[in-house]
Length: 223
Length: 229
Image (tube, rainbow over all chains, first blue to last red; front, side, top):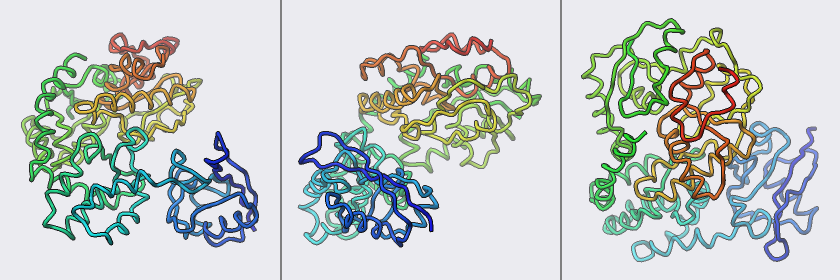
């Protein structure tokens, strides 16, 4: 039986000043990541994680709680590090404060139904895995773009308003960089980009771009 | 075989390419190519961008080409034109130096640079957390500060991870990390004047025993590698 030698990110916002990585060693008798974490929770009364969370990070890859330990070992070996979706927003070990992510839904409220919030919440991993988030934490997230796409399909009469919501250059779609972990939604985001051009919502940006175009050319010539 | 020399690109990518091809014993003709790499068109209407590129390439009567800039090469790959990247045609045995003793940070943010492992097998490949992050060029026109934040984070991560220098294989990354280095240092309030960026072409030229003229034009002065030359 293989030995699992791993560390878990530990932090309690109520008592800790700094985070740390606590080491654990277990014989591999576990089926899924969730089983492993439940055992740790049993043995370590100060450790916590949210069973309702679908994803966590292991060695900087995204894994579902229901993923088999064997899958993790294959990708990461039997020595690995478990972290929350965001160490920056961690409040208790693997549990994050999702207030910022959830607040983004507010801007969609006038154009969608209450029940649509469940779909939005299910897109959490696409928020935290957004490439640019670590540099621009005002970015609405790839989750908001995917959500806008789905809402345009469901609430077509609000198409223009929904597109407007995601077109702000400071925090919107212009900040999207191809998600290297989850690329199944890239086609949807590309369609959104085409819609934004068609509806001339990027006209203002193009307007700015037209001004910068000369500037950009000058910059290159200065090399 | 035509060597594509993009007229918009700086010497850092094209310089020494002619000499490199002579050493590699490759028959070629120079081809000065001019194309507006419209980043936004590429991102938001790739079909139109691709057609524009195809139209431009058709003017030059090119059958096979060698491209030194990786971004341009990857774009050309998506057309029906046949192209090879400079990194794909290197004959390792012809190298005079394999970078042994150097800690090198290769930048993988726009395109994967794993092809260098076969070429510079003496180098110690420095791993740094931000090596796969995009260089920030896409923000330069509407959010300059964000582009500086990203670029400086990448360079500083490579610097703090113990690299002697950084290598990029496209002109946009070179622009962000070297040409804008004064702005990056000012934005980050960190000094990395003793660090420098090389293009893949320059590094290859040095390891083949050449001395690229473009080294004198870098904003971050190239120092350590003088030992080789």
